[in-house]
Image 1 (cartoon, rainbow, N blue to C red):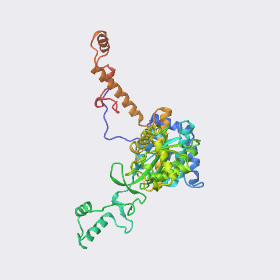
Image 2: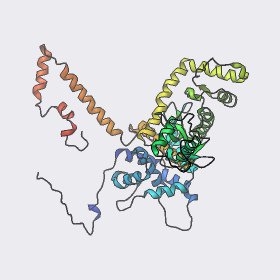
Image 3: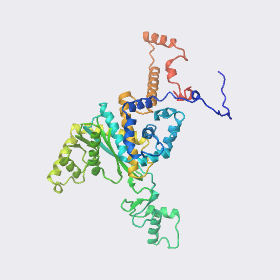
Image 4: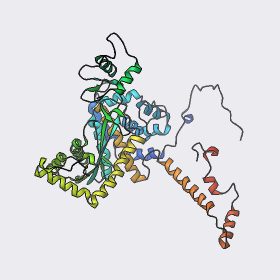
Length: 474
C-alpha cells in the first residue's frame, strides 16, 4: 500500500450527494438505550407532559423534549459538566447524533437552547422524568425499596469565596479586614494597606470566623459556606441520596442548603423517596433505614418512631460523659435504645457494610465519573433540575447493566482493559513458573514449537500501546 499524504489546501465540494455523507455504525450502548426508551414510549410520554408549557397556536416548532433530555443524559454518560461541552460532544459525535434522532443534515441544538428549555420546564417535569425511570425499573422487576440507605455529600457551587459580602453592611472581605485594621490603629484613615499587609493581618488575627449568619455570596445567595470532603472551605450545596439496597438505584435525590444538618433532613428525604416509589407504580413501602452516625439525633429518632413505621439502623456517636437520660422523655429514650439495639446487632452491622458500598458508589458515579461534583448552575431550583436528570441517567445505567451487562457508554473500555490485563497476567505466570521436567517439559516444548514468535497469541494480546496499530492502543 502506498503512503497517503495530507493535502494542505483542499478543494471544497459545491454539491454533496446523500451517499457521500459520513455515516456511523452507532454505539452499542446508545443503540440499546434508544431501543429501551422507544419500547417504553418515552418520547410520546414526555411530549404529552411538556405540551402545556409550549404555545399551542403560534411559533415555530421547538426542539423536541426528548432531544433535550437525551442531551443531558449524554452529559452524565460522557462525564461532561458544562452545557457547552454537552452541545459540542453531541455535534461532534455521529453515534450520539444518531442517539438524539438527528439526520445528517440537521444541526444539533446549541448550548443556549438547553438553558431556554430548562427555564421553560419546571422542576416537576424533571422530577417526573426521574420517576419515569423508576417506573421502568419497576416494570422490569428490578426495583426493591423495602430497605434503603441514606447519605449526603457536598456539591461545590459556581461561586468563589471572594464573592462573599457582609449581610449587615454589604462589605466584601477586603473592605471588612481593612476596617478591622483601622479599628486597631494599624492603618490610618487616609492610607490604603497593601495586599500583603492585609493577608498577614487576616492570617494572624484572633477570633477569625466565617459564618453563614454573617456572610452571603453576592453571585449565588443560595450557596452556603461549608467544609468540603477534602478539608477545604467553599461555597457549596448538599446532595442527599436515598438508595435502594437491593438494586442500588437512587429513590430520592434532594439538593438542599449545605448548612442543613443531616439529622433534620432525614425524615423529609425518606418521605419524598416513598412518594417517588408510589408514583413509579410500586406497592413497596420503605421499612428499614440505614445511615451513618451523622444522622443520629434523639429528636429525629423519636419523630420517626412516633409517626412512621421505619426501623432505623443508625450508629450512635460517642458522647463525652455518656448520655444523660434525665433530659429526655420516656418515648425518646425508648426510640434511642431500640435504634441502639438494632444497630449493634448482626443485621445492623451487615447493613452498615452494605450501605458504605452502595451509597458511596452512587456518589462516585454521579460526582466523579459523571462530572457532577462542581455545579455549573446557580440557585437551588436550577441545580435540582439538573441533578434529577443525572440521577435518572444513573438509574438508567443500572437498568442497562442488569438487562444488557453494560451500564455506561465507557464500560466497554474497562471490560477490554480487564480482558487484556488477565491475559497479560496469565503470560507472566506462565513465564515465571516454567515446567521443565519429564513429560511436562516435552509437552511444553511441543507447545512452544507450534508457534513462532510472531504467531504467539500471548504476545499479540500483550502488545504495548506504543507499537499498537489500533488507535485505542489495544
